Length: 536
Image (cartoon, helix red, strand yellow):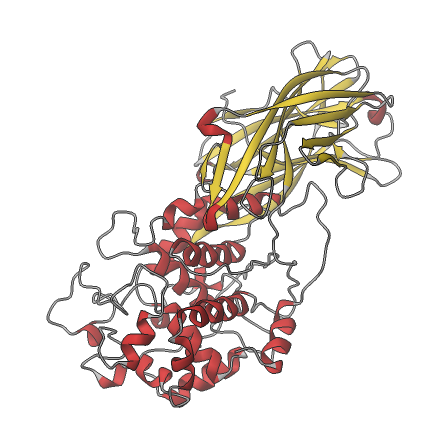
């Protein structure tokens, strides 16, 4: 169904920027949430829509349908003539609007709450929520771009409503930059899941039974991503309350579906066409962003990805304690389908010496993680100690298979960096005895002594406060830079620094960076560190 106009608009609203993957990137954490839902290592976000009909044990709720609806309502106020609006999370300030009746939007924002961070905006999470919902329900893969920036206030009105005329609805979709064909497809694709809540729309469902359990569905397979909503409409025999409802005024799906004489609906009746078209219109929908926003390339699953889970000084400061995982994609046809003969970590110290250390296949839960679309990943683990005196510069990954040996040097950069210049201190801790609903962190860093001599200023902490917002469910990320002070403790090769941070207790689990700025202007950082839970 793509047209030149559709392609042009898609490129215009996405503002795509190409970039090559080199570890680490700011999107590594997001790629994890996108693909790892069970097994050895998992991130939990997909649990909320598995199975497709899951509703957090709340009568009448289908989380997947709510997530899809939230993405559309957030995007729907976009104006392509001004470049304002779109998928920007302004929905978090708009849940009291009559256009956004019901609990679906605050439910979705509550689901997202714990995942919001400096690297995961609310609007990117809403996009991920749609992608996960469609995948969980048996729908197509929807490419996911990142880089959305959250709005700081409510946007204008503009979400189409069931009582609107066809002319009004078409004008709304035209404002969004969508054609009549795309309008029909988007409504059909969105309404393959879920239904209408009688508590929110008694004028649609009828006043006879207004209750949480009375949720008339859009089709007879509301937990499957299929064209049943199309088939039932074309056969004039179905249950969609926006097509077959007693109140003709609110039969908006009926008006929308017939807008081009059913040409599009007949195309969508084919199951393969339905899925491919839904992938197109959903991708376009979540890429509708303000003109000031530049999105990334679609997130690609990484075939080989390292995780430096632990890199810290031991108790006497003579060794680095290292726990390193390597994740191999083993999905059929897309990765290492047969287990490698070996996975070896080739460590380079700062004196130029190399040491080869073999990683072992993880054993817990079979050492595998699983995702949507039968994605499979195998995990290899290296736990070791490295000498502080020689330092730790970088590492390469050697993978030996029946076809030979593959050496990965981080996209041609020479290796994956350890970054031993700034290390998170094991003394970091949490003080929960604060007042006025706050907690305090004592955060420590160890800075290599030779770099201390070349500092332009004292080491610093970049701390992401998760600030509550009045009238909004999700937190606002406020980044504060805190200067650290040197403490008397030191070990050969490293000096220690400390900083104190006070933050709301509701957002105590967050992220921070440690860094130094050298006299030449270069910054050395250790980023996206999780706040400690150990008590002071």
